[in-house]
Length: 627
Image 1 (cartoon, helix red, strand yellow):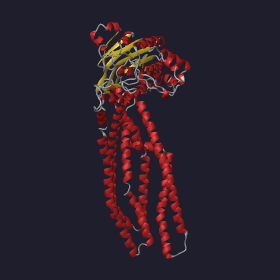
Image 2: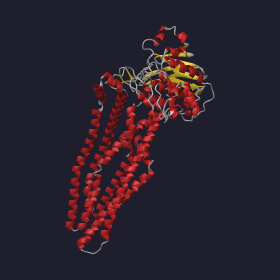
Image 3: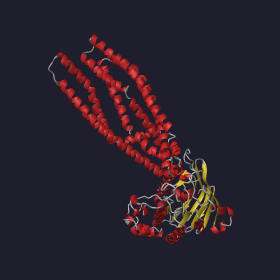
Image 4: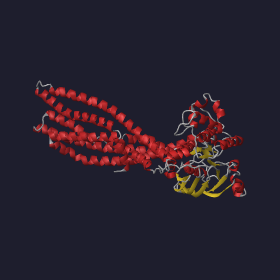
């Protein structure tokens, strides 16, 4: 049994109540349907014999009413069963994606995950219902064959000649449908991903006047989508065509045999009518092309979902985090993306209570280091220790409490501004929220909002700098041992950054800080600087000491203070899918900005050359950090 089939079986098994209701209704409908020809046969014989017995007529009416009521109730129960199964499967899929965290982004693109979470779950959610329909169709057909056998065994013999052909056609259709469904949904996922790219870079596309080329790029998977969809219906049409050739021949043979039986005196006219009706039930086995195709689609969808469920989860420990001051140690950290080293056996010691600035050229691995240091991204090799405890085997809840993040583009989570600042697993007091906002220099503009801290996030229209300050307040709000700033003040001017920095020094006194730095002033204010070069630590020391190296000074030279790109090369409009850069598999920053703007493409952000994937990248990065 395939793993995807187990997934389908498990989905159906979680709806046992509805499954049982639909099965009972099918049973009533099928039993009434099988009894109806017999009742009609007796009624016709009564009419032809001109007797006054009304029992067969009353039985026919009762069976018709039973079939109608069972069919109506069955349609309602089937709709409920499909919706419930799909909802539960989507819940499980989204839960799995969030548990995978940032590691999911190294295996699946955002559009692909969207396709699997919506399209694939909708198809796979109906698998139990499709299987139930197929089973009862087969049982009804079998019941019709048994009835034919009881009327005249010769009728079944003629019908049995077509059964092997039906079996071969069903197997062919299910296999073909499974393959084509996978191809269709894969192309749909790629189309969705390209569309997400384009929407994220809408302003850049307009500014670059590359709309036509971008439309062409987004629609490039459409021919494959069309080919897979057309192939699916072509396979179904071909199977239906073969069955339509087989079906009349079998019907003619069975009815000719029954007619000869009436002439020979073996059958009554009523039995011949019953034989024709039972033949209709038996022929359902030949008319289940749609059910076979649906089963193939469900199976293909389940195979795509199983790829998500089969992806290995990060290790989840249950050991307590010992008390400590926030000493952070990274040993032999290796991170790969697309068979490329992002971090290469990196080793780094961060003393408790110190501030470490992480600097380096674009693509050197700064953001990935920040994610690994905060346990948001598990390394492929090596270990991260906080106060001597291996974070891979430490309770995730305690790790979340001990490490806080401030991102370049913090995603607004919660209902109100207060919710955003105090967002976390544990409630935060209103006093702590306000103090954190003051430390981040956000209390001023928050107080000017219509409802101050209770202003709904949906009504906010903030600049990039204001949003970053809310993210800083969120990082300060908890009592974390370590706070990681991933280019968290790139959208504020230098003077404001210095003011916030002094407030942070006061609020986070004694807290270990790791700062991804693009400005030379940030590095100068840190206790130590870790200089990264191609995924390795080139040097560690005070900024003034490293500044004697011309190569270090060049990091902050022309273009050196720009944020890390998340791809190896510019994201030009119209290009085919851009490849990930050094930090790209795990959502590194876009270009660092100091003009207080929201970025080239608003919330989504963008690079100078074309549309960026800012919204998906930054949202996924921060959410994974919060997990």
